[in-house]
Length: 76
Image 1 (cartoon, rainbow, N blue to C red):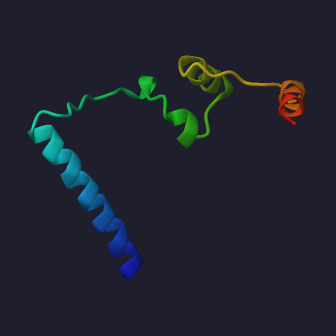
Image 2 (spheres, rainbow, N blue to C red):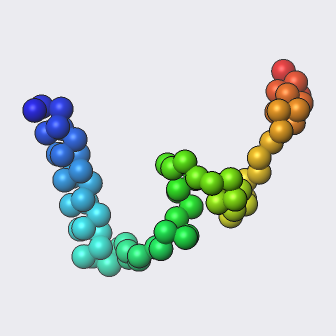
């Protein structure tokens, strides 16, 4: 399957690039527990409390529709 092969090849190239950097001591890899995975905000459906927690941890905030409208009008 050519599509599958291209995805696999991309992963292989990326893996070996990172592996090389780790071996040279340029990059250090650490385990991060699921409770600290801030990227979950962008990759998973989350309960409201968890979503709001991650938004705050990233220094973001949720805007109301009214706030979004006001921002859109300011930039127009």
